[in-house]
Amino acid sequence: MTTTTRESYDQVMMPNYAPGDVIPVRGSGSRVWDQAGREYIDFAGGIAVTALGHAHPALVSALTEQAGKLWHTSNVMATEPAVVLAEKLCNATFADRVFFCNSGTEANEAALKLARRYSHTNFGPQKDLIIAFDNAFHGRSLLNISVGGQPSYREGFGPLPGSITHLPFNDVAALEETFNSLSDTVCAVIVEPIQGEGGVLDAEPEFMQAIRRLCDEHQALMVLDEVQTGVGRTGKLYAHEWYDVKPDILATAKALGGGFPIGATLATAQVSEVFKVGTHGSTYGGNPLACAVATAAFDLINTPEVLQGVTHRRAMLVKGLQEISDRFDVFQAIRGQGLLIGCVVTDNWSGRAREFLLASQDAGVLTLMAGSDVLRLAPSLIIPETDIKEGLERLEGAVATLCAGEDKAASS
Picture 1: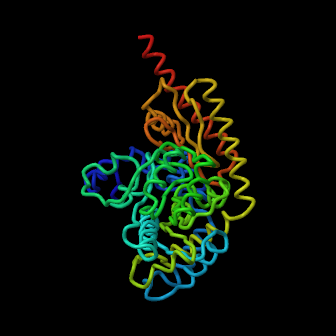
Picture 2 (picture 1 turned 90 degrees about the vertical axis):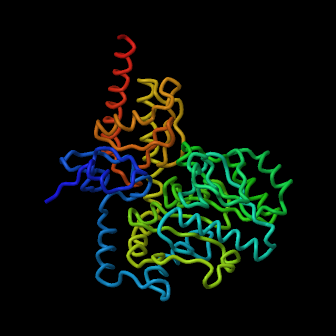
Picture 3 (picture 1 turned 180 degrees about the vertical axis):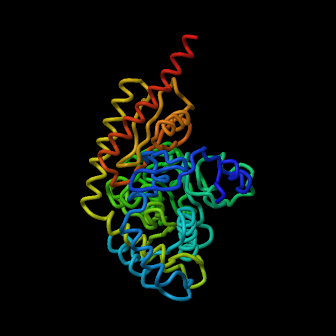
């Protein structure tokens, strides 16, 4: 049998990723094993995707049961799994209608197309401006990198879609000024309740409430990108619930399928009406396999036990991370909500978050980055307390090794 290696990856895959040397082959709960049989505690969660850990029995059962029934029909027919999942999403949220797709990028793309279509239909073609925010990340399609607030993702892909403006995140005054000067043209504001890829930056309550107020005053739509913050990640089903606001449109994905690819765009009935037959679509959207798994994941996550458990697990992790920082002086702030955690490195470690990621991996714990200055954690929502404790011990060992190397370099 041929063994896959990191070198064989480079021979057949496009070079847009730079994965590490570890090749996982098996996962169970919050632990992963590589080709050599080495075990890792998973604090990364596939970038906030495996919200119930790896190979959760309920998800495996849902997938295998549906696999023996029906895989695909396309959207020329309705399927039971899609309708069941849509009903659950509508019953649990602000939404009246759902559009299914395959990823967060597609969910945001549909959300923005829907917003523009709504404004065009109701107010005319001149009302097409999308307000977005610096440092935001909404996906990798051409429209989403244009709306995203990180210029490096746009470089070399022009010409880009227009009628988009970027404002500072959490700046209510800039938002009000833009609405006052361009209100006749603004069709939507898209925002992440927590900027995930942008450094795990929390939106301030007054900022989120100002977006809702100004959209109402100027007949614009509030679009929430909850791809990373949704489906229990912050201890609420969706993070906007913490802010006491309701969007007009919401994009969700990642944890929705617990690891099986699925995305969804949620909206009110009034807004959804403009997506007439033929205006948008997805060949695989609403796939019975994906919807069956997502329904099982949703039923487990949308419970008081799991959502309240997120808050408890966050407290454990933050306490442990703070103790590590108190000992080694490596984190100047711990940001985020629930189990989306950003550890901002001190000035001494500025630009070196990747070193913490690699050292953690060497110590047997998987972590993430959110920019070059933030170590990010997004573990399973039901990660066992024993795994949290052991993972923190391994992380502390990784930090100790890094700091010892710094001390040795400084003394030589």
